[in-house]
Length: 249
Image (cartoon, rainbow, N blue to C red; front, side, top):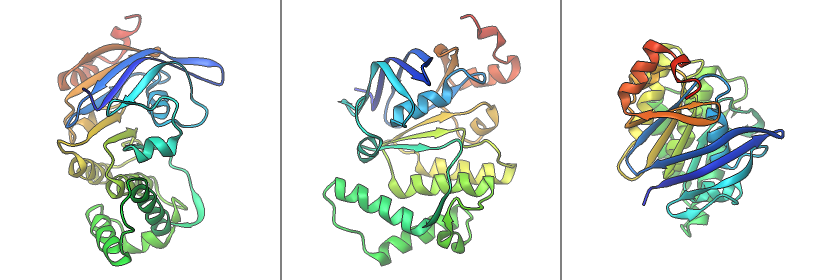
């Protein structure tokens, strides 16, 4: 059984149908890249899987670890192991990164019946992660995403992912707005997370991220449907030919 199983997913936003029957199977240990032209439904798919408000599931099902999560609230999906890194991370003034991360980690531990993590252990783990993501330790004392650069916001999303260690990470255009150095740091964090027990769904426009994170499968969305699926070579073909040849598929 797949870690993630999506069947005939139809999703609307503001009463406009965006996804028009998407099927997707993601197994543990796999990285799936979701590509496609602007407006094809890539970000809608990621947000709908996470249960984000404003993305209405008209029909279809989403199963995570053989459990139907289609009607669950975002926090319930998160507790079951689903993580979403936003395309446009929001600012939370007045809440420091360290407060936010500690609250999120404790919420997950409580949902799984685990004891509260000690402050010493939490900080030791967190400092190690920030160092690997090349973030200044003072970053933890700043408001969540407040006055962050684009690169800091995207690295902060990866920091959250590594702290929560989800079963399935949905990364919505994590590469957008990153320079080459920041892209390499983010890719390194994603590859560090990748293992046989979890899975990653990458939403991206470009091959450049996939030069650092080799996908097992590539799916191309066109007009709310999966127009074509393949292995990593499909992304290279898209880089060369664009999306026009798939429109109308």
